[in-house]
Figure (cartoon, rainbow, N blue to C red):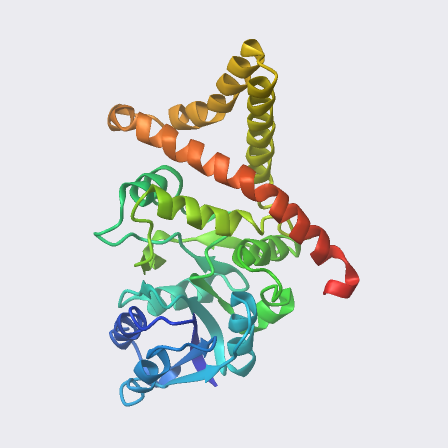
Length: 318
């Protein structure tokens, strides 16, 4: 049995997979105790060829699982993994040399928990990624609602005891997995020293909005709704305000229009002000714009998430 199985889901990751594998080559410790499993979702570029080119430097193999969603891809690799521990990382991430050594120490001293960290940012990350990270993820430590699936480490037996990732979800499968884990009594903890660099960090506001639309369209599920309660609440409130704005504009009711617009701004301003400091005040307009964009996009995605959530609850869809 290996000590670690590193699991990487991939689809047309020719641009990033080489850098990810190169960073894994630099890991400290006994390389014989590590296997790397790349679950490829039918890439049409050179992803698989690049993976195979590392066979002389890593115990790595790629296998095609075409037509699966990301949770199912990760599960497929976990089913054939031989490691005592599973380390999930995404193809567009770079690990640091102490990543697994540090994780081994943590899991040995605190067995049975799920660990990871919010992503670190590359130098080319845009202002939305930098502000969002600084406001909501920087140096987060201890018990958290979830850790991202692109940097989640857990004992293999614990992973399957929880039931693995939901294979149906298009996104948000990591939050849902961690919600189920917490409901079962398993702790989910963040350790900043485990952070991996996410090369796919948002470069502009449009990129940020698209990513939030993707995440927000799957926030409603049987186990995941608790972990996403605040996001769902903000989305519902924003959707109500937006509806009242439209109503006020259509019915030519200026008082309703103004009240709804001001109501729309209340949460972004309150959230931006809650963690402000001297440097934060200078970027406050960008923070408010970012949170408002998040709220509007999540409000737009909420009906989609509700529809998908209802379908997922139906037994014939499982």
